[in-house]
Length: 52
Image 1 (cartoon, rainbow, N blue to C red):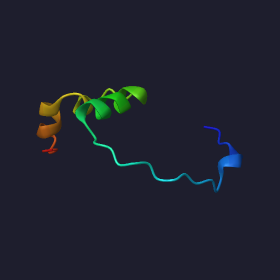
Image 2: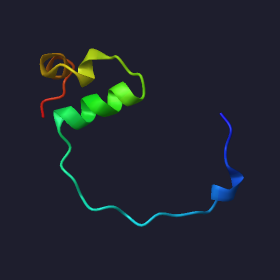
Image 3: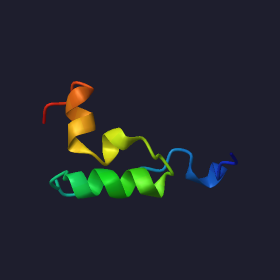
Image 4: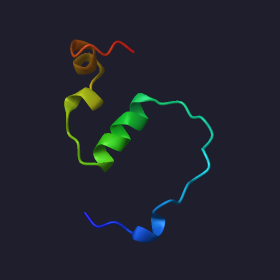
């Protein structure tokens, strides 16, 4: 993966807090191409020890 060296040392201001939902998690997983069912199925996530 190439890196834009002009961005070294660049910083961003923090964003406002936002609620992480199942839909947000699934959308992010789809965006990065991660098809692990733990991100799409609450029962699978619970079976893997994620209770929230």
